Amino acid sequence: MELTSTSITEGEPIDLSYAHASVGGRNVIPQLSWTPGPAGTKSYAITIYDPDAPTGSGFWHWILADIPADVTEIPEGGPLPAGVRQWVNDAQEPGYSGPFPPAGPAHRYIHTVHAMPSAHLDAADDAANVQVRFAIHTTELDQASVTGTFQVD
Image (tube, rainbow, N blue to C red; front, side):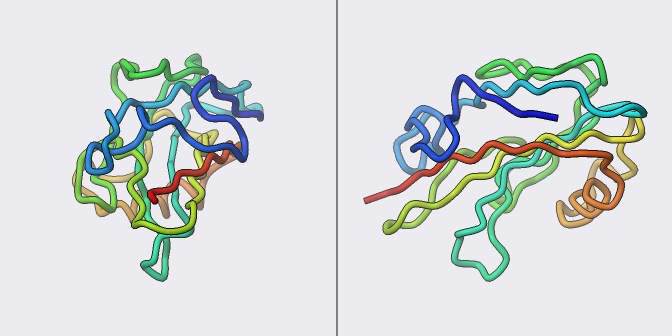
């Protein structure tokens, strides 16, 4: 699999429009497109993770699943395909929360698409995001990532 984006360039700064409103952004969902997953892919999940957050365990900005197997793109700003489920992220917000690191060095934002073996992720709609991530990471068939950076001066 390969993940590409017209919104995020590998290793480059993420535009302010995709950042959280708390740092002056518009919280726009970035465009993401991917090549099809391996044989047996029945759906996709997407996560965005900041490993540089000062929490000891990073910070999860977006967790969604149940993207149909015939969908290979999320357009900038959405909409999301019918039936997609999103969970509360580490900001305690449902859905997407763009970058909003504390002032200081740039943080990395790892955007990952996961090829899943079932059409419906085995996680309750009200599950804690750690449970959802466990369900994704322990069953995924393949994954691909693109990483951008964001910094608040």
